[in-house]
Length: 219
Length: 233
Image 1 (cartoon, each protein chain N blue to C red):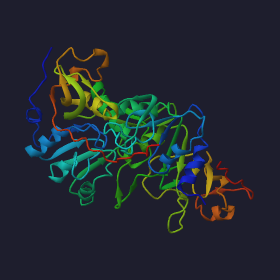
Image 2 (cartoon, each protein chain N blue to C red):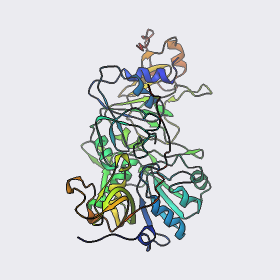
Image 3 (tube, rainbow over the protein chains, first blue to last red):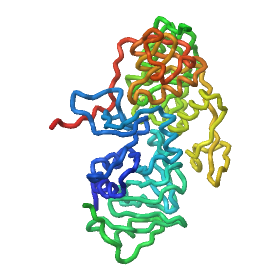
Image 4 (cartoon, helix red, strand yellow):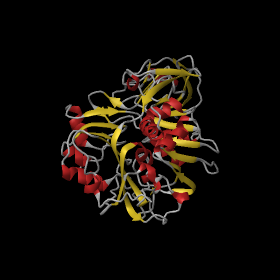
């Protein structure tokens, strides 16, 4: 079973040289730490920055330079800043090659819910609805099961939706799964030490799994 | 040149009265019109509708206006950093419309470009789409979203001149340029106000035509919401 950093490490392997990538808050932010040497990527922050660099050194924080998580950050050579309308313009027109975001639930037909728990949590969708509606390539980083052991990969989402029929790849602490265009999860890889049976038990949505599924390579 | 300079925030907001709709620039606490917000708190105008990506934190930004119960309705995309906001929302003291961030930005842009509405795929099939007209273009569904209609836009820039031209700095640009274009009356507060001719026309982000009043703000706190650093070495 993977921890959050393990999920991030596995997702980083999906990033190809030359990609523009938007990383959501939470596990997706950690992916930046595992981008392989020699793979040139430009990170987009939807508040209006391409070319997000690492956190600043202590004492060099600039309140005017933050990422979408409101964290102080730096730029890199070749960075650019722009306004919010242009930022979502490049998202909508699919200039961003890959979007990585978190989810509370994903369904077997590719629906995603990650912005609201009625009566409990009302934070808002931020840029998530724009991203999932437009991105051509989305990877969801999420927990496969909640603390009570209940699956978050469902036949259909129970929470208010962020987007419909838009997710094609999910990476969890247990597995890498594709979502088939005709519906259903397909088990692609299992996390080290996790059995196919356990993944089957932990997935309440329709799951297609071969008896023999390869273990993730995290290196 | 037309001179748009006013003495300060109090004069700039003089005709903002109860019940008006305001746009406020900023992302989190980055690039917010601090001086205008303070002046609104001091003036005590009520029943405001505020269009802003976020709602500040409990003791800063729009959070100050929430604390004094001056806001009737918030139109935002993300409000996660404000406990007082969440309390007022869950107790139905505050009306809230949550909309996708790109939709928020583009509805501002539409107003500034003189377009009544835009089509976006964001929110199709979700509760955001309820009651909205949809259109199919090239096999994909889009929602029709209207341009905002705001009485005032309050924006913060880095530099400006008395002709109303604005230059923003780093990611404090965010919603400010699109909101500046969208207000019926746009009020810009800047860190440094200069005379016409001192800013290179090639470097202007917002042309002065969109700005009705401008002043040099004072005592910017520029609070950092998440101070993240890395060790030296």
